[in-house]
Amino acid sequence: MKKIMHVTEVLSGGVLPVIAGICNGLSDKYQFVVVFGLRFDTPKNLNEVFDSRVKLIPLPSLKLKISIKGDITAIKDLRRIVCEENPEVIHIHSTKAGIDARLGLWRCSAEKYYTPHGFCFLRKDQNRIKRVLLITMESFLTHFCDGIIACGKNEYKVAKKFTKKAVLINNGLDTKLVNEAEANVIEQEHRYTIYTAGRIGPQKNPRLFNEIATKLPEYRFVWIGDGDDRNQLTSPNIEITGLLPRKEVIRRAKNYDCYLSTSLWEGLPIALMEAMYMEKKCVVSNVEGNNELIVKGKTGTLFNKLEEACKQIIDNEDYGKEACKYIKANYSLEGMCRKYEEVYK
Image 1 (cartoon, rainbow, N blue to C red):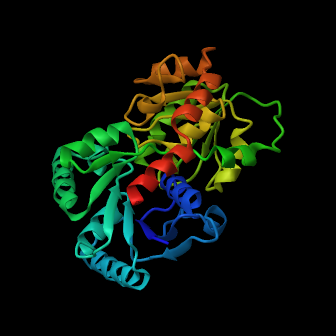
Image 2 (cartoon, one colour):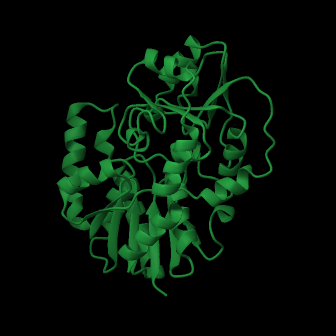
């Protein structure tokens, strides 16, 4: 049985359900090893998330922060694990692992694929010089792997500028997991609730989320997650849940009404897919990733300014049923796994 190794510095957020979906969906056909860095938001119940046949190897030296000494240590540790496990395919996820693994394993005979989950230079919180440096780095590192597997159409367009060896495999949603999680949840009468899910950091733009909540004091707002920028969520009608297991997130969302994304950039967001599948009203920022899933006037609404977001939240338009159909038809976990099987073969 062919052995596939996944490597990532972040096994949480939207990356976790993608890797777990691939491994769980294809464990009958491949042997999987997952090597991952440790962060504050790494779930403690990973053994429950993955099929029991998947081997999980934490790698504490693989960190998000760039450090010459730390990265050399991470590369040495990663090489040791690769020698011990001897995988035939190495699938690398996210920017930092993409740097360390592609540089450190370039002599490794295994096939190597890279999925950015949102190219780092597309971040809106970086200055022009840093973005140019990151673009140069990504272009250079393209030569150290066998191809880029883009997780969405926008990412694929960018990947093709770097290499002809780019393929598109859309992220897929594990609808069975969602169904199981919400199956026994009783819908209760509640104050109209707007929610979001993710790490409270620059990407998710908590400052704008707070401004919207301040403008709409009669509504309840919930941020599912935690992060360094939680101090920006000061409006008294905002509740911060802290880190929660994914099934608990789904169970809570059952009694929420509107999914709000204020993100400055996205890859192809699983949290938004989840909300669409659960037939939530979706009001999201008009950025790449979000606007790939939201078909204006059909599956949700897109906003560019604060006032637009507030208006869309309080209006009566609701595209929940169409959004659910759209996810089922275009972003199934089964479809994603079939395409990954073609690549891994």
